[in-house]
Length: 337
Image 1 (cartoon, rainbow, N blue to C red):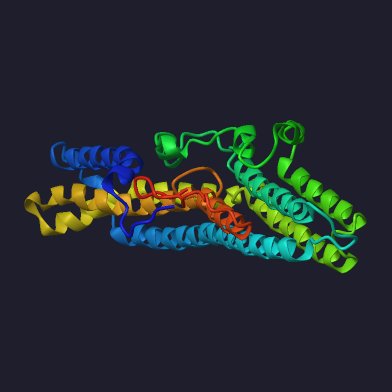
Image 2: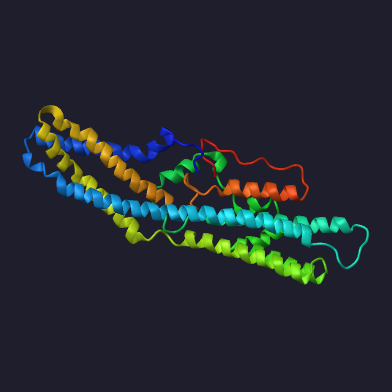
């Protein structure tokens, strides 16, 4: 996610230079044929091309709105995970208490249980983040948005076992990574411990039900993330948006020739810069939609899940009374992940 109002040129350049160069060569060639070889038949009325451009603009706008909806829904989901994490932590700290008896070392035992539950929750959101950033099978093409992140060492994702090592003992990590969905397994482990705490009278029946409801809420939010992750933007919309955009880009210079020819003289060569600008605008609108439709792909338009997870970690560890808290994630090259 970009943290500045303006996208710097060195970020735009990898997306733009190939298409801009192509537009310059293509329009220059057409002007050369029209002026030097006197191929006057290349000029066509601009009205039908303008009609195509209007239709393409509406279609690309629909695609971009739909892509933005996917991106914004993903951000709302992680906002809900943040709020639910804080609520779950408060309930763990207030609900899990010794009710059966009292004795030496009691407070230490309860504090250890609190830490186990909250650290396992931090492991859960970490596992969910790592799973969501795995590349899906349909994303096989070269992606400049992903390449920008790969070149920044601070954003290179570690393996799941290393990420979980901050919160869980090694034997538990080895058991977790064997499962196809580690995040789901971690919530199952949370539920098993809550049931054991109820049986041991650390948790009343009512409080046990309340905490289980929050685990179900995490399952709901995880499922919403997986729905976006596993279901790509419908290809019939994405593909034909690409086709229509490039169809308009291909025919556009012939209409501009006719308009510039009305002015006469050297103005015919103004087709090159005007065509390049218009074509670049339409192509950029298409690319923006493409790079926004999948918000969990570890690219520059990603939901900043790493920063969100770090904020949750700071909040939960502060609730535990810890003082050696990690620093909040900072943007690198104006990108926050």
